[in-house]
Image 1: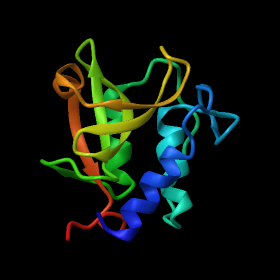
Image 2 (image 1 turned 90 degrees about the horizontal axis):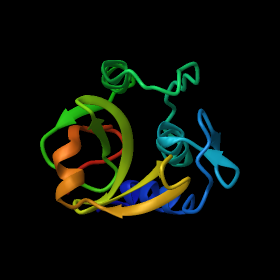
Image 3 (image 1 turned 30 degrees about the vertical axis):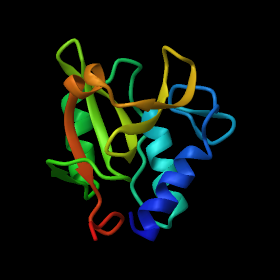
Image 4 (image 1 turned 90 degrees about the vertical axis):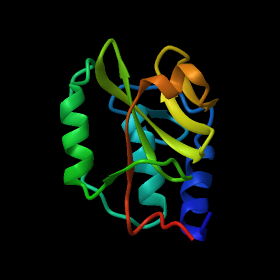
Length: 140
C-alpha cells in the first residue's frame, strides 16, 4: 500500500463510529455511505464533486455514472483505497471504501454508523463494481 492509499484508509477509519445520516458529510456528526468516501478522499487533497441531492432509495446506475464522471476507473481487483459498489435486490445502491482486499469501512444504515466489515462471501457476491482513482491509489 502506498502512502496516499494509507492516508485514505486512515481517514476512513478515523470515522468509525460516526452515526449514519442520510446525505451526511461531517465526520463525527453524520455520514452516509458516499459521504464517507467523499470525506476520506478530500482528506488527502483530492477534489471530487459532491452532489447531495439524492433520495433515500439510491438509483444504482446513477451511482455508477457518478463514480465514472468523477474520474474513478473500473478495475478487476481490490486494493486499499478502492471504492466498492454493492447491489441489493439486483440494483447497485451502496458503497464502501476498501481498507484491504478483504475488508472495508462503510457507513451502513442497518447498523446505524460507520463500521469496518470483512468482505466475506455475502459481501463479495454483492459487488457490482470496483472503482479506483488513478491519482489516489497506484499499485506498487
